[in-house]
Length: 524
Image (cartoon, rainbow, N blue to C red; front, side, top):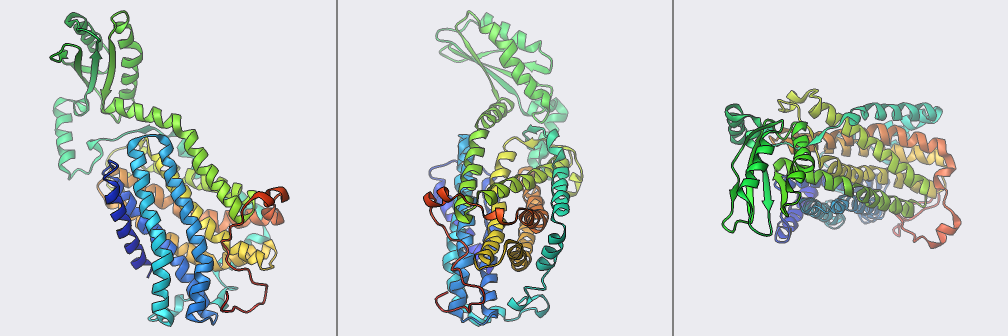
């Protein structure tokens, strides 16, 4: 059922994306990334609802009661978690780059339609299937409500309770260790030279690079503009000055347009755009070579080409990054504070998400930039980390990490609201969610890793980054670090200033609160 719902959500989401192409120019890699995320969240969201439905059925509820409880609890959590994912992805619009805005809209549409299908179609399917939900079940792997005290999650929760500080320190140290390669990250861009060797574009690239040099595939362009007529002699001087620069192989004669007010000079560098010296050459031309030559002439010179465009994109993204973080982290913090009535939990969730994302970035750097195991995934040379990858990955991973945080904390808060103390509530919540979170994460990891098989290096970087982040988040963070820190904080987890409580709207994701020992009723 989760697979069916995910496919329906993905199909409707892509209809929305196709409609969006009438308003946005969507990058060629966007559909693949959108499919990756749509399948992952679609299966995850449906799995949480189905699991809660089966839990109700095993406790003796009728089909109608089980569906109602599943939607009242897991359905609420899915809706809120999905909203956080959409907010995180739409935060990319803060970069103010058209291709990133289009990407954000496309992925947000897929996630949005997936949420809609999960909370509308899935309850109808559950009502139709009814008691046959466990038909052809594998008894060995089935878990009932009576098993909640003997699950792996309960056992590890009790073990963490005995020494929470040691578990918190060890898990944090592991995440920080995995994030070490981030400090050597080299942001850049790739071209056809990073494609699979079986592709025509890669073969043509290699032939041109071998015959004419690696820079022949990505020439620089210098455009000179004047309010009047350009002086050919002055343009020749500009060409000679460029020709004398280190890293320049050939410079074409200036080509002047018919009106005589614009000229173009083509430059073949000695390096590919994957080389850091290509960026140095762009800055050298823009800052050192051309300004003195234009001084006093009234002309303006601009450096273009693929390498120069990438430099501009990186500068734009770096300048907009603070706004991006303010939107994504700030709004997520506010939403978590409102929902769980605890700024402590919201702040802790944001910090832990950043730790897991940092660990994922570290692995991406080690694999693609350092080359550790890159040949195993079809990458035959070391690559820079795509300049827009950190912002892209952060938006997606922050949202997806919040999914598991919401699912776990909603069950913990539900137990706490029903009268359990914080320590027991953490164990109860972990006991009933550890199995489903692990299964959902395993499915998502497989989905993301499947994109490593594609020849596109962009999708390979996305696949590795997303898969490892989900793996770390669902194991080290949700199974160890969250229970350990909540055990250490105790009742401080639920601290909420009284003045803030009066002005903050109440949003309930744990469903109808039932007193301890109360029997489920139809009203539930």
